[in-house]
Structure formats: C-alpha cells, structure tokens
Figure: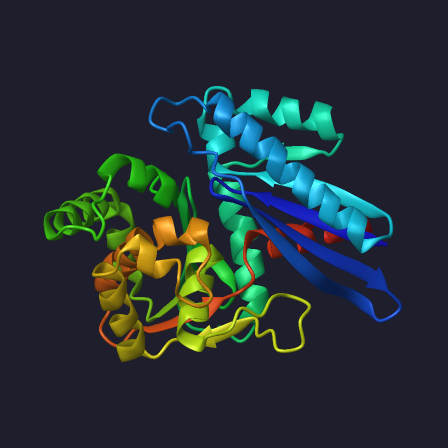
Length: 312
C-alpha cells in the first residue's frame, strides 16, 4: 500500500510518500511546491482569491507528481495555521476537497505540535535529556518541551515568517532598526516560552521544517531529500558556523540569496527573519545549548500517526 501526506503550510505544500511492503513501512520520497497562502495578506484574517488559486495550483502539481510516480495512493492533507486562523480557512478546505476529492483535515495548534514532536523524535530517538523542539512555519511556530520522549509542555505562536514578513516589511538588506524591532516584538510575544525555559533549563534545541532544512543545506552544500541514498534525517550544528551563517544572511540581498546553492526562491524571502527568530530563541536558552536539526517534522509525524490509527 502506498501512502501520501500533504503538509499544507502557509508558504509551502510538502508531500511525503511512503510504502508499506514486505520489509515494513518506509518513506519513499518527498516533493515540495510553493503555496504562498499569505499572498494578498494575512493580517485581514481572510485568505485572498490569489491564495485560493495558488493552493489549487500547488495541489495540482502534487497530484500530478503522484500520478507520475505510478501506483495507487491513499492521500490525506493536513492543513495548519493559515487554514485554522483565517475566517475563510474552512472555505478553502471545502474548495480543495470538492475540486480534488482528497480528504483535508485542519489541525489545531496543539494537534500540530503533537504531530511535529512525533516526527522530530523519530529522527532523534536517543533524546533523553530535557529538549526544546521548535518548528518554524509560515503562519505559526510550534514549541514542544520534552524529557525522556514525553511531552511536558507545548504551544503554538502565530509568529510564522509569512506573518512577520507582512508585519515588518524589511528592506533589502534588512535594516538594523528592523532587526531591533523584530527581536523586541518576538521576545515580548515569546514570554511564556521564556518562562518555561527558565524553569526547565533545556540544553538541547532541535529545529525542524523548511527554515532549519535551509540552514542545513547552506552549511553542507547539499539538498538530499527523503528517499535519496545520501539523506540524513538529523544533524548537529556547530555553534560558530551557525552564527557565521546568520551574520551572512543579515547583510545579504535577496538577489544574492537566490543565487546561493541550495536556496529556493520561496525560502529566500523568509530565511533572514527565520535566522533572526532562531537567534532570538537561542538567546533565551542556557549557555552551552546544543542545536540540532531534524529533517522529520509534521508530515512524517502525521504519516506515522495515520498508519498507527489504521492498524489499531
């Protein structure tokens, strides 16, 4: 049996393919398409006609890719922040279900955090200490505190990079005053997270999703995906190397970034703010914190949850 999960994020729709065969369940490959649901604005609380058209194009491309791969697929869509927070998010859900005949489930912030944790911990099964899991999205960012693979605390913040780009409209390159304003705003919004960090003292930060994948790709010079021979589900960042990358991003222009190996056009728009956001969270962590990256996140967690539910 072939399974397909579509992670329907604010910026990107990500497809994960898997098969359940004689040797067991395994991920077969992935495919990503720019969705840009924030185009036309998110601050109004309404997804624009442009967003509806962009979502439909992304869905068409994903289903076309699945058809080209051959075989029969059980498909499910997992819709996140842009769907659940927009007044017409359910209208977009209904539009896509009617047009393509694929089930689409809008998950709550708590449900999203649980699926993300499930995915990340599958890439880091040896985590026993207190760790903070972090997923940077386009509409929201999820944080999950775990110890011995058990969730102690979780929260979703509507601070995704598409929302932040719309709110701060940074110059190119970003101006120092915008950097300061962005960091001040994030620290204020993340006070509940800061309180948890002070109380629990996690010394391991594991980041997932497209931004952390981009950090990894820029540092390694590769873009190995799930299913490819050289794919690695997790890596540890060297502190000074990561800081140097962030410093490079802060002075870069978009036209430069799109020329960098492993940088996609859609990620080039958001990666500077993502680096600033990561640095803000990093600054809240205890001294000596280790930062790791997970290539598994929501869609991997959703795939495993879906399969477990079917087998129950």
